Image 1 (cartoon, rainbow, N blue to C red):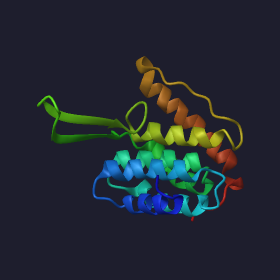
Image 2 (cartoon, helix red, strand yellow):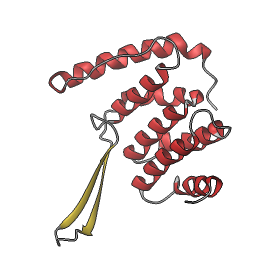
Image 3 (cartoon, rainbow, N blue to C red):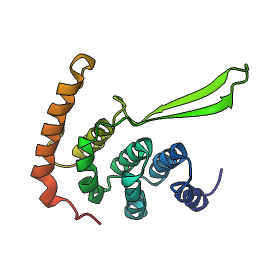
Image 4 (cartoon, rainbow, N blue to C red):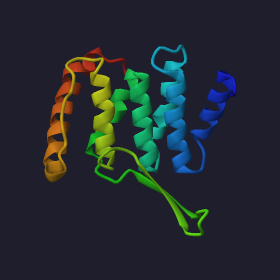
Length: 170
């Protein structure tokens, strides 16, 4: 296994890889190697912030999840507006052949409901486990749109109640 500094440096490089799937997975892996109590947490969170503006919604969604897992609270301000983004956050790898000769495809979802708003809600829910009143919402497939709208309303109220105690956006 590579030593931590070498591994982290490689993952940081991969945050700017041409493939959006690699960028998203690198964000997730980097956050998992650093964690919320590591001295490198804030620097790692800051390195992940530009991915919230990535052209690819899968990458953007993985970055939100990574920032939340780091408990990088300065990133909350940039995640909140993404609750309004209802675009798909899936990513497919295609153009390869499976061992049995069939066309290969690997599908990745950026969140449970496959939209950026859901990824933002999930990240903010993770933050709420440590800040203020814990957010608790459920999304049912039969009432998905209404449930997501209600979750956005509740999460916006949570943010408004807690934003004064958060570190400023970098």
